[in-house]
Length: 323
Image 1: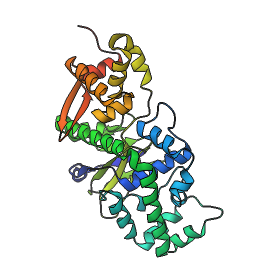
Image 2 (image 1 turned 45 degrees about the vertical axis):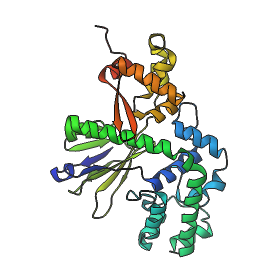
Image 3 (image 1 turned 90 degrees about the vertical axis):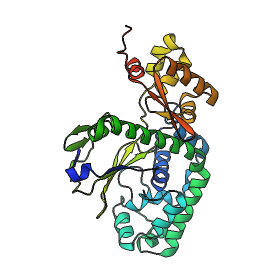
Image 4 (image 1 turned 60 degrees about the vertical axis):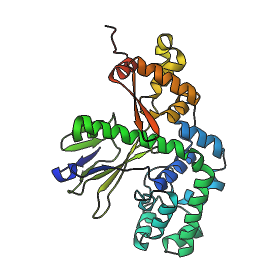
């Protein structure tokens, strides 16, 4: 169990990242692909598409990324660049990481019986080795992640809107209590299930929350002099089929699937991908569900965000009672 200990100063300095961390998502997508996690029919829509796109060519696409992204466990801190708004900025920030941090991060990776020459040169601070890392980050992103990046961004935007609405309606307590159904907020401590057991005092520097599309479990990173970073999964791989099957006779199978897909708020585009329907069909079903009081729709700039109403959530849980 990880236990994050908040002071009053920490609670005043909780922020949510404006965008997904593009460098981290790149690394985590490589991890999901190399382990084969989430390639089935019930996985995240973007991950299913990524599996289909890469289709056994991960080694050729990812290059040296496979040497710094192990199948599980520790990820090098230099792959966390929340200040980067795009991949180019992230690559530039990695180039500025001090040699000592690079060496420390690489030494914390699981030992390889035969590390490559490139890996040894990267650990020794060779500029050419960093250039190869940057090149392979760009190549993998362009060839593999770019086609699904809009889906990742839409999911992150929906999650950010949900957190903002939760904060407005219930304050900091509600925000921390609803980050994940398996986490427990018992002020002033946030309890996060983990195979590790640590008490983590935030020391008045606050917490930066980063929603992640590809992270299956939370990641916690301490940064000297800065707020601690908590990366949390924004999409659950739970079974949505059961609810849709049960509600099919009442709503129709497609409309029930659309309702079930909104356990996590979504834009119309994301909703269409999750439910496996056209954009026009997703919009039509969302309108019908909104008119029935099961879904709410909020306009955000040029897009709309759909979310379950309390009645819609209760219907999915099976505890809605006809009055």
